[in-house]
Image (cartoon, rainbow, N blue to C red; front, side, top):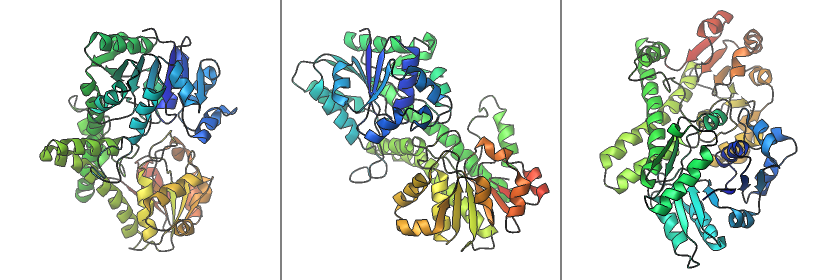
Length: 463
């Protein structure tokens, strides 16, 4: 099937950027991104393209190039589904907060709603593509729903997981390590796979487009994130040992990273990983293993999460202990709230949990992040339901100036590795703070020697 119209259900961190790139590279294909969230669609359509809801370096320029030409953002879900030959499902799959699998399994209610809506609207044959991160065998459930509509429409279900790192999503889409497409081995399934291959082949070399069965494709996504998160938790486990023994975790990481069997990526110790994928996908993997009675396998992967949670608590405990075992009514400046640089995504950010711990100790926290708005900071804290929203506002303030954040602070906690932090006038910051002036570098972005020369009491993770 030659694809001329694509619909993507879900205008979030995956759907929006992915469809923008497809539209740019395939000007002959009409790409429509739909979402029921009117405010989100309005933001994607804002005349000021810098105000689109997802911040990724280079994304706004790409959206501006294609929007209105062959890239459209709409709340008219039914029309987009009806007209498209190929439909991406890119909706949220949060971890269940209730019932069987609570805290581990993926909640597939939005996926099921999409499948039922497609089944209801479709009048001709469609290719339906899983783009959300889903547990193994989800395609089977989608196919079951679509194949029992009774309207004679034929559906082919493909798995096309995303492998995007927030902050580098545009480059990841333009120059992917691989594109993975899973589908049935039937004649119709092979034809559907080829239709999607032909879309990506407009800019991705053929040798980087891998085709598998659906189940292998689904599991590959979970496995990739589990392996990456495992490396982070491994180096973070070593960071605590380094602190106890006098070793420097950065030197250890550099030494082992030069081993060609290991490599240097994802060996930077920190306050812990965040984001929407790693924790959710590992918990999903744990649930799948347990559901098959593979308890030892589940315990192994669950320990990656245990180590990550420990690292966050260890960081907040270090702040309290260093500040003479009390931070009550002391001002702590947070530089960074996003879970990593070059994104406005705060999901599972370590900053949220460190802040929550310090608020419990009655600290006063002032937050500065170049891309995260104040209402998002409070939304993140309120979501934890540790205390009332009013109590959070009593202890937390959000400012637009890093120097204001640090003014009269007893300590600074660096929670995101924004490049701009390195460029600050740290002499000015030092002289504006309470003395002794503490810096807790949770991302190992600042230079210890330079900070100590200025007069800071500097502490990083693992050295």
